[in-house]
Length: 512
Ligand code: MCA
Ligand code: AMP
Image (cartoon, rainbow, N blue to C red; front, side):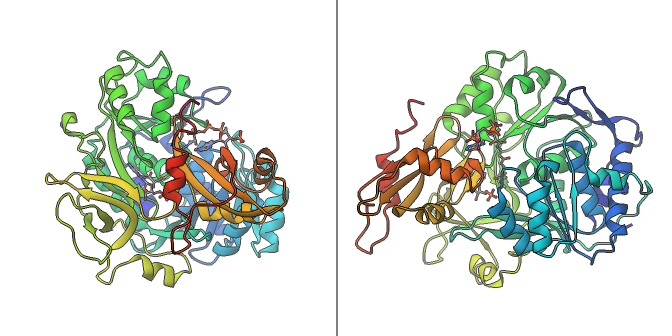
């Protein structure tokens, strides 16, 4: 058995009594209880199925399915079989999926059965030979085929620098890049977090995040599995449902929107949180008001941490004492992570100096899939990765993020790349040009807004543009408001001044 294979490391942490419950579902029609043995056997059968397909080593397995425990098993089975997991947001539509399949050339695609028609057509057209379905009610051809397989499987030998996953991210110029993460990137980060966040025997995690991004898939799941912790599993985030289960749990992880939504529930009380040990926030800036309101209402201090798809977790506020968790900061670089702040001339800045955040460490990815030039651009000559985040380190070592040099909007923890949305808008009849920005939003943190300039003589209807976008791209990317304007503000170089647009429309969602 390979020590380098992440599945092998996770499996080694399973409890001795495999018949204990590992995962209990919270929002299926009846609660389902999966034991550690179920995870071991289920992942073995799916791994065997993958093996039976005689795929080349390190084949990509692209997965766009609804959240379920079986989807988690599929992830673990891909690791186990030594292939490369490629998670895809289940909101993506055909144009988005076509790009990812075309770029990653997966040998296997797994989709929800309701999407099989269009996904399989695209996949077969692009050369993928195997398309399976998997639904969140334990049905689909993947499980039908896996059920015929033996339930024992030896994890395939993998070195720690072999690829485990490709996570598509960014696309500041429109094209999304696949961040290649190795078994070692993921395992080293998971081991550091297990220690740093003080996981203890008996911890129970409420899992309510999607499992197609780093936060829900890697940070939460690896944490629970490495600690042999039971998970209370929500297919979808539901604030009332989560609060009702808090008294059985000790750890919760969420993006700020999840905390904002729970704070809107009167049932969120100190009493409801009495068994909780740790609430972790990340993926987007946590507003100081949310941090304070949470503290007042629950008596718990949110622990904010910072990471990226390219690096998994980079910094974290301390676990102990809770009083050292500082509002408005993302804490300290994690053990093993190097973090420095440089100015635009690549010169190091002293404490308090605001500049570009650069990082290195065993968690930093292996590069962008088939984009050697992009990869080279994002690393400095001495090997540090440019995060695109702008911030500073204070005299005590706390890191704060104050902005981004990359043109990115983070809405409810999902990244939206203005260049991509502008590309779609600019192709629409009657549109001369557009600028997409993020402005403060009470629920999503940032709300996506487009300012659109019509062509001379064209009559544009903002609602019709929104409807047209919804027919093409994932709805979370579609602007919550489209504003028509005669022109876009530009500087003397002709560059659109997005800062001015952000200031001008800062209060757009204030009353929402
Ligand atoms: C849903 N909608 C959104 C968002 N989510 N619009 C903008 N931003 C969003 N985040 C829209 C849908 O398109 C839909 O629009 C309508 O809201 C209802 O959709 P529904 O699915 O019912 O929404 P929801 O269940 O209320 O979802 C909100 C959510 C979800 C629970 C906050 O967005 C979520 O789970 N976010 C977490 C994302 C996450 O895990 N990020 C981690 C990335 P319409 O009605 O028009 O169809 S990992 C990362 O960033 C790094 C590495 C890190 O540090 O962790
Ligand atoms: P992703 O592309 O999904 O990996 O998103 C990574 C980006 O999310 C980072 O580069 C940051 O801009 C942002 N991010 C993650 N955690 C935090 C945080 N705690 N505070 C502010 N921004 C964050």
